[in-house]
Amino acid sequence: MISWFKKQKDNIPSLAIVFESGHIQLLKNENDSSPAIIDTGLIISCLEWNFNGSIIAVAGKKEKITHPDDKSHEVKFFNAYGEILYILRFAGNICGLSWEGNGQRIALAVDCYIFFATIRPYYKWCYFSNTLAYAFNKSQDRKESTIMFWNSNTKEKHIKLVKNLFSLTSCGDFCCIATKSDDISNEFSLVVCNAIGSPIDSCNIGIEPYQLCMNSSDVFAAAQNSFCKFHFHSPKSKSLMQFTSEKPGLSEERCIVYDFSDASKNYSDDYKNINTKPLCCMTCSDVLLVVGDIIGCFFLYTLPKVNLCYIIQNSQIGMPSKITVNCTSEILACINIYGEISFHSISDVNTLILKKNPNILSNHSSMKGSKQSGSEFETQFFKVKESDLSMEPNGLLDKKDGDENSNFSRTSFIGSHQVKWSNRKELSDSLKSSIGEKVDTSSKMISDHHNKSGRSKLIERESFRTKNLSPVVSKPLEFDRKCAWDIQFASDDSQMCAVMDKMRMYIYRGAEPEEPMTCSAYMCEFKDLEVKAVKLTDLMENPDEPEDGYFFKNDVKSLRDTRNLISNVGLKDGAQFIEENPHPRLW
Image 1 (cartoon, rainbow, N blue to C red):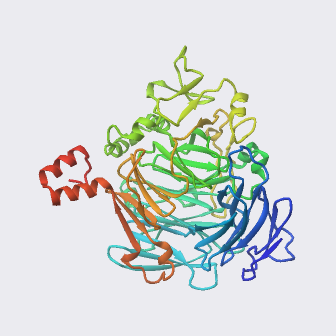
Image 2: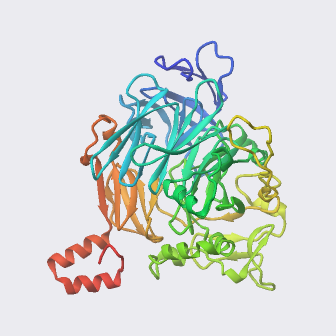
């Protein structure tokens, strides 16, 4: 079976050759001597490129069925380089598929039915300081992108032209643009910009920034087996340096690369053949950095020192595609390639951060002030008392001797527990993903005293070795959303989040959802009891002319109820309702 997308550029694979073994070769042309090879794990029945050759959909029956109840047929979506993007599962036989002309939907023939699936394209965009920044191509030249900075309040527009754009991210008042310097060199740039696109700081790095995130002071970029931290200076921090006589330092001196190359040696054979990056997702807050790999291990680093303190093994099967933490860095949310969402408690790690960094206690407690007592997240996620914490080879465990639950410690809530294993072999055998005999990233740093090209310096740090840390198996809270594609935690309430599932937006307070609202927009922010989203798919049809109509707002139920009580009943009943459901926005 052969599928050839004939409008593709010469340097991008466009020819797909299918073999009976379930392997696919992706070639740039018929003479390509180094094709990308995909082991789909399917008995392939059909495949097809989308309208611009950026995604190929492959349908077939699974070669191995681990459980009798498993859906035996799948549609796997890969990009042009063979990296897995998403998986759809079906119980019936898939005999055909076809893309819609604009690539927004795909039709699947399953037994005697036809299913239509909506595709959520990946856009390079971010939202910060009331400004929407998004990238698009004005011409056929894919190397040059136009980034539009549009302030939704003042309606001002600023345009920035960028070549070889990798990704965008934002935090607070700034965003970061990751680009490749040119086609010849192996250098990449991280440029921090303000809300009108003006650069305020930049750094050259020697790793490809496939994953990007940032907090108020640092930018983190991840490649295949390494990640870097760039400490940028804002105009405010530069002004403070003038009073403290502190030298800002060169950009390359403020950027450190952390090697992660030994992580892949722990992967099972099933994962070594996947054409994807061992480090597949990352997120951060001001006190915590979380890096996820393809087998569902989450590596938690304390900031600003970037010390590895905790490893979580997700018991839920499926490669993570998106992770994020709530505003108090106590809950980690993960969406995998199947669209399944899971929540993991990391509040015990947060306790360690506060113990080691008492200076951030005031900032952290101010965020916790918005937490509501008696909420579902507060009772359902495991929290370890500070006096009971000890750092053991098997993770953060209870120090009490003679406890009847010392070998198997289960919390009182449903769906989450932590296990203390008696030895390393027992731990290894218990992990569903077969991560190997020893779980060890061995992230030692290499000194590079001859680096004169302006790239990031690799510095030796013994504290980054992880040989004394083993993953704690985390069974996540059972959640009823099975087709999620985005999640946004509230920036001012640690117990609230918004989830996009299919064509609906669900707002959760703890584990209790509110009535969903039909919406297909991309979420920008969640604060002041209001979710702000943008209809990027519609906007990209005319990206030069952004309008207010592309934005979508969804109020939380308590905000809607307060307005109804005040307008229909009276101020007295409205004030009583606010006292029972306190939030600054309601007053």
